[in-house]
Image 1 (cartoon, rainbow, N blue to C red):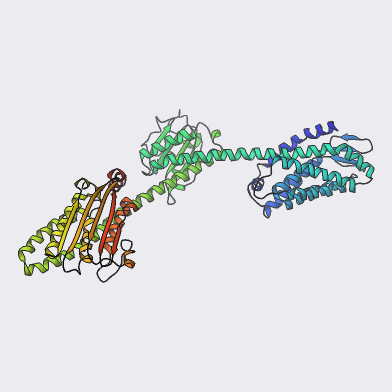
Image 2 (cartoon, rainbow, N blue to C red; image 1 turned 30 degrees about the vertical axis):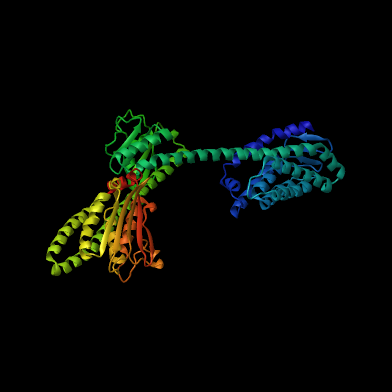
Length: 589
């Protein structure tokens, strides 16, 4: 009995070999990763594991019940012969990985084949093969993988059930009993171990592939993280060199190069003495990649390097694209074509797509920034006429009743317009300049509302160096006068407060006018609104510019009670917090 067990365990080497080969089949990988097999996948699995069950039968030992002797291989059986085999292993694995349908299907194929071989246990063993598929299928788990102890238990259980079926079905009973006494325990243990060993090999190989894939993904993500900041500049000589150095250190080829459509942007690694940045693209194969937009593997015969002593004997040349158009190439050089494995090809192909996407993102970011700056310019330009028309109306009325005062106002208007024109040509200005702008405007308005309007200032001189979007403060003050106090006959007060805070500057404009109704207050600054007195576009534009430049924390806050006045407040973060955003805005402009 012990010798039989050892012999069967030795033959499990065949199982291990087949298990290893099995992991290379696509349908098998589907069984490992999918919760349920469908259609053709199930059929492929049934045929494969059924065939594996047949191999398990042929690699068994023929047992003669009369002589109690074993023959090393099982082919055609006499009426007194049976087989000590590992047929159950394939059927058990089929059920565990593919479910009861795959298990029963594989069992039917292996069982019918066993029946055709004859012997007094033919029917019993054929029936037991189907039952083994049912048993293993019952343990199939869609959500998780089967554990090794479970595989051992099911393999042993299936073989135990086969021994029981042999005792119940095989005739004569005396021969069946004699057979089970000799082969029963060795087959139960061997098939249990074989099932666990089969699953162990599968899991180890799959885990190694997963580990390799994870490392490859980790490397790709690391490359993406390192290259993104450089490719934001676009595909320039300096960014290309930085990217090539990163790829050279991570992938470790003999050299890495990047080109645009006409010239080499960068070359890092061997042969940089003649593969020089700035040189025109010379090789026909690189021009073909630029023309066709498809990855190419070049060898020593197709590279055609001008230097006959060049150590670079092979290259993978991948296209770099933007919006579907090839704008350059990414080149990895090796000493020979033998170094270029499928893994390397897949990695380089993925990297070319990754870098192409990064270039497209960079281009989109630049386009967005340009659009943002263009919108800011448009918003600023919309504010200027808004004040001009109101001022001209004031001066027009004063020309008739007080020409001297009108002349003074024209001088004030000239100063104001000078400030206003400057504001439409710059991205940022100081609070000091904004305050001068407001005072020029109020000189006109105070002349209009003689003995009616009083302007109060509460200014922290230390805050005036802070930078803000131009044409921000004056429209708020204008709004307070135009809409806030227009219906008051006297004691109209507008107060301007500029106060230094711990992390920036707080700016407030108050009026004691009629206030704003609550239903309208919720919308001001968020939308352009039509009304009897205006569109609300000024506050909307200011709010847009503040949030576009400094973020939501700089948005306008408006407090008002109808009949009690209005307070408009906004916060400008300190220079330390804003320098990056402001500089980016200035540079992109």
